[in-house]
Image (cartoon, rainbow, N blue to C red):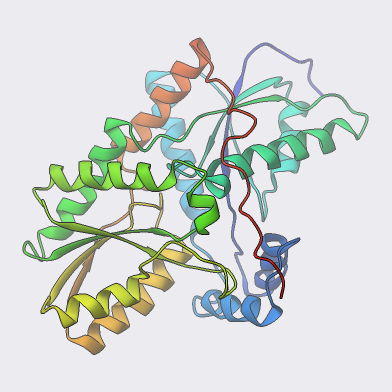
Length: 329
């Protein structure tokens, strides 16, 4: 183990995903541990991954982002070692924190791969950080690095501009298409106690203005909760049927709530929504997520550099509480 230094590191924290067929069920068991999700639903979601041979693209996308950040940091600073850990699959966050400790890192600026504030998109990451730091400290080999988590960043101009650039590319194919933004649905009890919905509306309005689309819709996808629990609506499929009934025949979908084209984008939009549009006779084009767009990479560098000089304040104790569980009958 190296002697601890005052030089901080950078840590990318993401959701994680399986990389082969036999990873799928253990990964989903990690995701759903402690949640009241029927096994039948888990097996249904597993089929989404099996549709792509059990390999989620999210880990490769994080590797690509890290490589772009290495170049950006090397060219423009700050000079930090870069690390990556996941909440639900390898490389696991706990293992990464141990590696950082062994490398002598005592503090890290951390970006979670979620642009919008909510329990699952922000606070749950903080809870996982606290849990894994405690587990690392408990092994008797020394304290885990201090983790300074960056705040959600959907209001940042470079994020808006990167989204708008991706969307503008898609609209070149169908310039008159109806614009539909999508985001991950969350329980209403979570939405009512977080800035998630307001931030989505603000970001969508800003991106729509950039591409000259005064009319747009915000809808949701990837719902996973029990039927009796209210979640944000309308669902993308229901909305596409409504647009068709209203005479709309061209649609541009922009998954603004996601940072990369991972499984929920590839399956829920590029597979299911695309099949529904083909059935309905709707021409569909989809904007890419920001992924490694140069403006997004530059934004991460800006946020990290700013946090080194002026660390963000931790969230308030009651910010974005976990959703209320539906009462059992």
